[in-house]
View 1: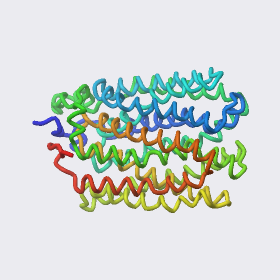
View 2: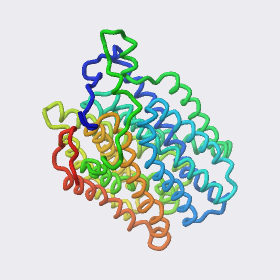
View 3: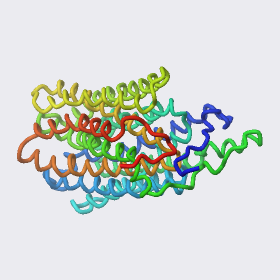
View 4: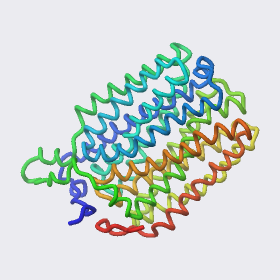
Length: 431
């Protein structure tokens, strides 16, 4: 048996004796992802108050964003491997606790340097969220359910982006941006306690049912594959290149959309607080629709990898339309176009995340997700942190919106070139 052979799935035979427990686990993952994104969007929503108090211009603000994305990217290199070795329960706990503390300490920032330090610390520690979340889904859900499960927990960021801006705006106006960071960080520490008490690996639960289950505990947490083996696999490179090209679009809208609405269309903090829920409410709907559609295709006999690519192609074709956001002078047309962009990207993400759990065993899922996250973060540094600060200052928003419209089509083209059909999970598809 090779390291890529998939262990028998308890989820396919329901040996755990807890058929509904996986949905409770998904709820915890959803809440963690929601808080994860709430912590990172506080700065963008409260950017005017923070920039005014700390005297930050567009370039310095771009440096702060770069500190987050750079450390977030570096964190992915190690987070996936650490989580595969520690296991989902302890690995996710470590990430939640450390990012919550980093978020709280951001409220102590007194200069561009201290703000950059704590945003970098937040990025480093938040990088564990998606490797752990995807690993949990791989452990608990059948392949046909994974895209839907992923889209459901990946609705967490959208919930943060729907409910978060009004709440962050109100808290910022009521208690200031510093206490806003502290309050949201404390929520993460509370969730970490619930995660520690409640999360169990399905094989461990199966062992509690009785000897009739006879689970194979060797399939549980605590092992991982080597990077050098993963990097020989074309499936890994398909995920890596797809994330590098497409993730910057998401980062761009999170980091720069509020500032774009401030600068170009005259929104104030209250206007931002009520425009963002419209955008990400649409994103939730389209993301879950994409996850459901992939499962529906599989149920009709379409091979899982082909179903993922078909949904990703549909999502990618929506993005060029959204480049018109940089040209129109009508603010609510911008909201409609950006809603489409956020929804299409979310549907894309639900399926590219699931490629890792489709193609690799649970012992490798966090590592593959981490490598993909590293590539996505690297793309984010280049295309959504460093470049926009200079492009916006000297050329305006139009060029960057055009770029964001064509990264997803490039990504699906590269994925199709690298891998046309899913190889056997027991083989390495060499580059």
